[in-house]
Every structure is written in C-alpha cells, then in structure tokens.
Image (tube, rainbow, N blue to C red; front, side, top):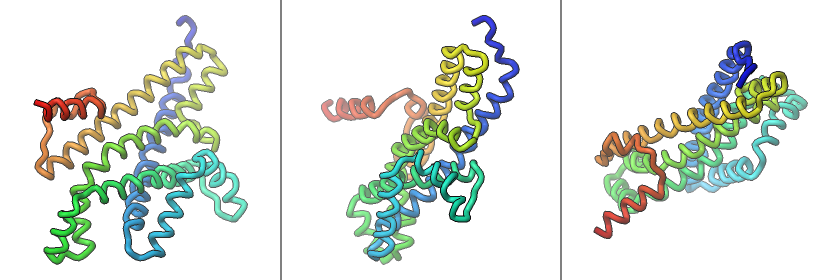
Length: 244
C-alpha cells in the first residue's frame, strides 16, 4: 500500500461521488414520476392513452440504456434540441427505469383485492378518489420492494454517464488507475462505496415500506426493519409460522 498518493485525488473523488449521488437522486425522482404516469395510463379504459403508454413502456424497456444516452446526447442535437450532460442522464434514467417502474405500478394496482375495488364502487367514489383513497394506499407497500431493486440498479448504472462526458465516481477512479496504478486499491474502494450507497438506499426503502404498512395497520418491529434479511428468509419465516 506504499505510494498510494490518494491525497491529491480526494477532492476529485468527492466531486465524482457528488455527481453519482446527484444523478441517482434526480434520475430516481424522474423515474418515479414516469412510472406512475405510465402505470396509471396503462390502466385506463380508453384505448388511445393505454396504447401510447404501452408503446412507450415497451420501447424504453426493450432498448439499451447506453444507446438511449448516446442518442439523447449525440443525435438529438442534430434535430435542433440540445441538453447538457446532466439533463441527458436524468432524462435517460428517468425514461428507462420509469418504464420498468410502470410495470411495478401496474402489477401492484392489479394485486389489490377485487373486493376493495367493489367496495369503493359501492361507496359511489369517483374513479379519482377510488384510486387515491382506496387502491393506491394498499398498492404502495407492494411497490416499494421492487422500486428498491430498481433504485439499486440505477445506482449501478450511473458509471455509464462517463460516456457522455460526466465525471462521476467511477470515471475519477479510472483516471486514478491510469495515473497512479494501484488497481486493487482504487477499485476495491469503489466496490465499498457503491455497496454503502446501495445499502443506505435499501434501509431507506425498508423504512418507507414499514411506514406504508403502518398506515394500513400492519406495524413492524424496528429490529425487523433494519435486519439484514432477504425475501427468502422472510418467506421461510412465514412458512414456519404457518406450519406451526
């Protein structure tokens, strides 16, 4: 570990980390908006908005995120529309991950028991209040775990922004490798930083899920919220409880 010479690179690494976090936050916010808009449109009875939403979802799920970034950054200016690199990254991540998120929204809404829909209709609620007051509050807890997975995938996709001239954390690490060497150190550090970012997001999503469930009267103990667990462990615990 002699001669790492990390000091002169500290500011660059912090700036790169800031770019990574900034793109992740804005991209996730854009993806959330796109997911709900498309996810709700695809539920509509009217054929035109439903068809348009389905085409958009399948197009952005079926094409490469890298190609989308390149097209927005290099090809779109040829048509007279030019955005800076940050805007391109946010738009590309928002549309790509929003398309995947739309399927999460659609599936969660469909998973709400039919009796809840029928009860809302029996109360003579308008479609807007039916969705806002009855369906979505029950669908939120179902959306959060897959949204958490998409958020982690988004974090892991942020190194692609280097290809549209943004200097993120991975780009700085690669510059350090080219100049100083020490590949095992710098990329090991990178692994740790990305793991920490992903795990912080995971804990945040666990808190959101617990809060959403609490609003439905399904409170979880704090130690379970912060427990290092996976879906299989939860399912095995439920299965053991049923067998007992």
